[in-house]
Each structure stands twice: as C-alpha cells, then as structure tokens.
Image (tube, rainbow, N blue to C red):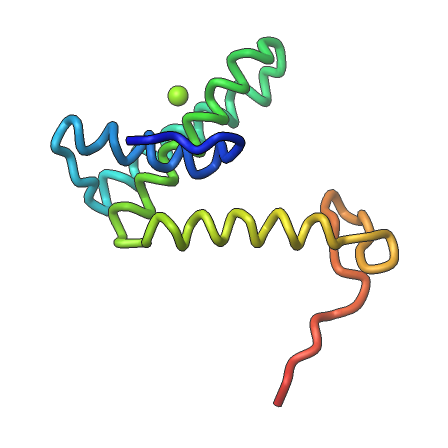
Length: 117
Ligand SMILES: [Mg+2]
C-alpha cells in the first residue's frame, strides 16, 4: 500500500483494509456491527468519565476504524466512503450562522430542506 500525503482519511481507510487483508479477514456485517457498537460504548463511557482525554481520543479512533469495517462488510466501495467524508467536510464548511443555528444541543438548519416534487 502506498500512502497519500496529506490525505489522512484515505490513508486510514487503506490502512484498515490492508490490516484486514493481512489477516485474511473479510468482515461480516453482524460481527462488524458488534465490534463497532462495542467501540461506541467504550468511547461513550470514556467521554462520560471525561477524565482521560488520551483515552477518549483512543476510543474515538477505534469507532472510526470499526465503522470502516461496517462499510467493508456491507460492500461499500472505499472510494465512496472517502467521497462521503469529503462531502461532509464540504457541507460543514458551507454552514454559516445564516443557514444554521445551534438549538437543543444540536446545530440545525434554520429552514427546512426544500423538496422537489
Ligand atoms: Mg476501544
């Protein structure tokens, strides 16, 4: 595997998939979801404890890695996942105080999404 400079998202996904391949492991959906849920529980517990920031970061990274496993198990093209990550970045970067507002513990759209008939 070659790594791409300044593209940590792509590097993480490739590294994770290489890791699976090295162990000749193709994640299956139920196992991948179980592992992901375990990691979500671990980061949740670490965050609620709130005392060890390094541990929270470690568990958060585990969540990200294991969700890559969920995508792999369900046949999501890694490039599609990367595209979606960059789409989220672009959407977040486009949000402003004019378009969004913080309310009820979440940043929400000021106006409902318009739907086309
Ligand atoms: Mg963990």
